[in-house]
Image 1 (tube, one colour):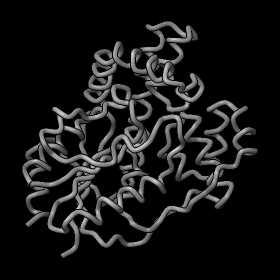
Image 2 (cartoon, helix red, strand yellow):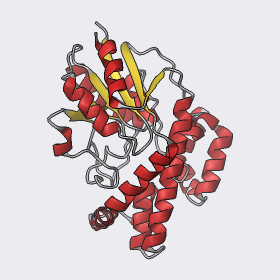
Image 3 (cartoon, helix red, strand yellow):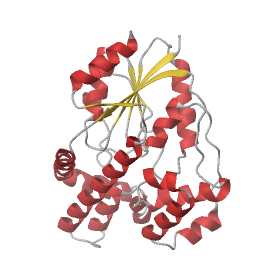
Image 4 (cartoon, helix red, strand yellow):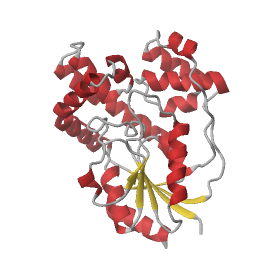
Length: 291
């Protein structure tokens, strides 16, 4: 029997976590997180990391793998994922839940990612450019990768350009996976999605500020925190008085709206995704898939 993997994907604040937990609990499955920032320990509120209580007893993996002081590549993430899969019986449904396309692909497609070592000279040169300039360079050199990346995140932009410099482009991985895969995408009307994002940012603002302050106190520089993008960028700027709390809040909401649009643009080109608007539709799809 081929291993069965169900991917629950969608833009940020679309309800992936809750849906994934409900489906995994119903079908006695496990969850592999496919989020590029939830791999870091201590980055919980800013990444909306699932809590123990929210897990409802469902085993979760690929969270808290590394210190935010260290770099962690997709290739490293993939090795962790492959170890979990190798120890899990093929009869156990595996639910991959997340919004990072390259991390989802790292789990569902076992062909290894190339190990591209850090290029210190290139990084130093690129670090002098603005995020707008970095994104323009990436868009020119690798339009495919530019479509899915956080265009305001210099850390990811520089890493992508580092890979492009070494390999010519961020490689496409077309090896057929030895799994049966169902991709379920959560379709949320744009206006509702923006409201979800804004409400979540408002509710988490005090906690995000405290978390960012704590991470800095643990030795993570403001510069590195900004490079994690979105929440950590704007919380760092508020804490260092580069912007006001009100402006930081509004700019963060706008950045997350734009990020959600890029996520959707990427996935709309994937004809294998089954888009759903409610939990019952997802349950029917999963029930048929697991029969």
